[in-house]
Length: 400
Image (cartoon, rainbow, N blue to C red):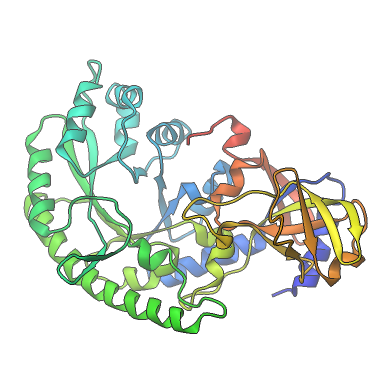
């Protein structure tokens, strides 16, 4: 693996003919991260989370690799677009209220065969039926299980508030409801343990909190593994030909894949390895997606100002949601200004070696959200840009 200084030098050489701001994906790192996800999945297919990639060319690249199969999408409009583009297995990971999208799905056999929608409430079936506009195609349905860890009789909850379905009997009852309703078929079950897969357990400078997180995650994994197995048995009693049971995420691939009840795992952020994934003991990846901002001012000793850079990530607001200055190493934000809308001052010794027009390389806090800021990704191999691929935004697709 190259040193950070060597990476900076080759990224600068590769993009010397381009003006910043710009975004790149290091294909050597991207492919190495893909190989690591497949290794950790232990023979079970990895379904790619599109929201963490948001670039069709890179979705195609990773799905062409052994060990990857299918897409996990985030909106119905995106799902239909991907299916029309030739992707044949698209699992929508969130319920939708897109009536026009459901009408299109119900009236197109190809789309209906490629897209699976998420349901956790009979009211969602009513909405889909009310939106069919005469379409009679059978809708493929996936049920979602609530994965949260509940303690002290439910008074303490650890985990995202997603599905209301928690117990085997609840999932089995909804499976019966869907199966009894003309025009729908249950094909899958999903359970995303975000409090395990999406929360780092090795926080820099916080050893006690890190230990508490590891203890919590261990308990959550054990509880969920037992409950998920019971849920799968209950749903299969209603739907014996269930096609898939999806679970996991980048941070928990190997643990989730080890469960007999799980048939596939989901991952996406592990391909780009944004900064939030630096705090894991379960895996170590190579930063693959970066963006560069040009130096436009030198206000004084130990300070440079770059253009733009205020690209916070979603989630609870905090310093960990900001991009991090990455190359050259040793730069930090001015605490009085942070990451600015149109300019960002950066402090530190390396600032004195930067000239007007030089670039500072950043890592976004999350993965795919970077692509909402750039129209294109420059794909780097060694020290050359070998291709340029449009992001979703570059194709005029802003789904959320």
